[in-house]
Length: 292
Image (cartoon, rainbow, N blue to C red):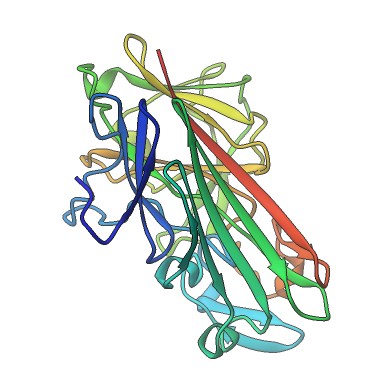
C-alpha cells in the first residue's frame, strides 16, 4: 500500500499513487484494491516507473557530446532522481513539474521544463509528459516511460500463462544489448505473429528492444481474466524487460534508445533525438486501461 509521502488520485474503479521524487507512479490498484504494479523487491530491482529524460538508456562511457563539449550523464538521465513539485492536484489528477538547476545544467546545458501529468477516468490512467524549452536555441532531448507491472497480474492466472498481444504483427528484428547496456547487433524476434509468450529465458540477455515498433498499443495479461491495455501513440520504440525470476514486467515506450557500440557523435545525431524550438514544447502520452 502507498505511504503518506505519496499523492493518491483515482476513480471508483482505479487508484494510483505517485511519488514526487521522480514523479514516479508507485502504485496502481483496481476497484478491489489489487496491486497491478511491481512489488519493488530490492533483490531484483527496486524501481517502479522511472521517468527517462533527457536520455533513454546508456551513453558510451556515460558521456554526452554536444557541440564539441562533453557532459557526464548516467543511464536514463537525471529526471528519475530529481524532486518534482506537485503543482496541481485534484481527486482524479495530479501534475508534477521540474525545471533546470545548476546541477542539471552541468549535465545538460539547457533551460527546460518537464511536466508529468496523471489523470484517471473510470478504468484508465493517462500519463502525459510535456517537455518545454525555455532557452533561445533548439533543445535536443529524448524521453521514455518505464512502468513495471506485476507479473503475474493478481487475477489468479499462472505466471507462465501471461503474454503480450501487439496491435499488429511484429516480425522485425530486435536490437541486441551488450552487458554494459549499449546497442549491439540485431537478433531475431521471439514474437509469433502478434503474440509474445512471456518466459524468463527471453530476458537472459537483458531487455527486448523494438526499434522501431509498428504497434502503438498492446494488451498484457493471461488469456482468461482482466488484462492491461496499454497505448503509446507518441513513441516509436519499445522495451520490455525483467530480471529472470522477478515478479515484474516493464513495458517501456520510448522515443529514443541507448548509444550503439562505438558511437561517439554529437547528441543531436543519435537515433531518437528530437528538437524542441525555443519557447516550444513536445508532449508524450501513455495510457493504461484495466479491461475484461
